[in-house]
Length: 474
Ligand code: ADP
Ligand code: MG
Image (cartoon, rainbow, N blue to C red; front, side, top):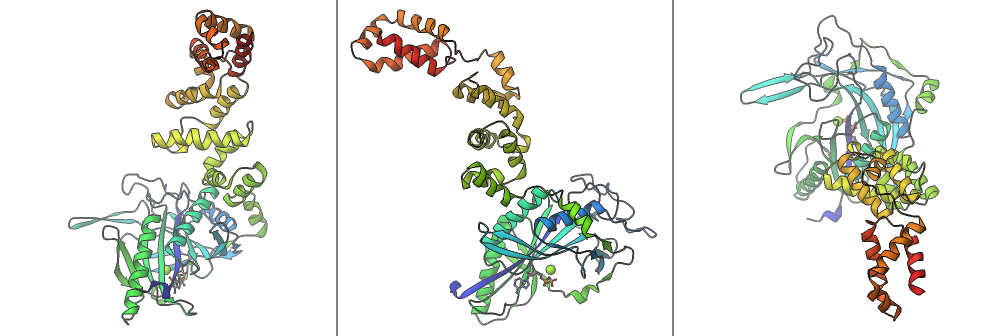
């Protein structure tokens, strides 16, 4: 195959479930994992006489997301009906935004800020229910029916599966910072349809595209896109024609399969939803909503590098998600950024990884680590003992103060006390003292070892050094 002659063109349609306790048009709960059909209101089942009521919290979340992606907020958007039958969609249509979406013209940067990927729009729509197939029966669960989704539609700006992965990770990171979507792909809070076409390198016209539906992990997105690019090149090189198909990705074979032919917008007979008013958003309201946005990962990373002197790698790790960044920022309220970086990325992450837990469920909260650092910096304990205390904190959830107290770990800094201990060690090792004085200076480490043994590692190393070297040179 002559892959280098071809260029891949990819556009993504991402469905992000809005983190809202209630659905887009009803008060039913959105909690994940509930018993089938227990989170369904009459509106969600499309009972006659019921009417949808727009959840403004979801509107705000879409606006916040749009602002975080430098988009234009539509002052007057509205909802449309997309008509089609599906058993898990009781209305017989989906309420979505087709003609006037809430957000337009966003952008997202990948490849260290050097590649701009345009996002055409973000629109609000309701999710469908779920069909559960078992043997010869199909069951319908409507818990998901009516949950609010943002559909985020990119322009066909992506050129490889690598860029697809980067785009998705970056989008997920921003959504999680904004808090509009939890980004949990395993639970289906974030799903993606990938549109793929190929064309001769340098050609101005895009080829026929296929759309791979419902990819629910970045890994599958990469596999599916790569498979599809190769499949299309092969077909075109054989002189055959491509159909504009809708495909499914089979995770076990790693191949895409045709699900149906592409349907057109006209097939859905879109028309404005008569049961809902247009969504009017004033500029004042937008400005107010903008105030609720947190510092975003790119800005944060730059600030860490430029103002705190943190290297790029560490800045990337710390800003990868907001919870880690918040943890770090609590540490640097009292401590030097470099110390905070080490304790967070080496000591804490090391232990979290080993235990297979996420920072959200870390047994050591930022204020507790900050307190431990206080004890190390004011010489209550040595840095070495600090790591032991950290282990115990991790295992027991106790505070550093409790552990230091319980195990009497306070560092001995009193010179007189240390002097007495050193005398003890020298007295019981008179022969070694003589050898040392006769030139066997290697024995210095032996004395240090004995002193530390006697004090269980609690003697302040600097004080020990200065007192010991004085005594030995007498
Ligand atoms: P539709 O609404 O029919 O699905 P859109 O024009 O809204 O079509 O595009 C849907 C997605 O397909 C967008 O993400 C867009 O970037 C992508 N897309 C459009 N044309 C192509 C193409 N030739 N190759 C790859 N992706 C494409
Ligand atoms: Mg589509």
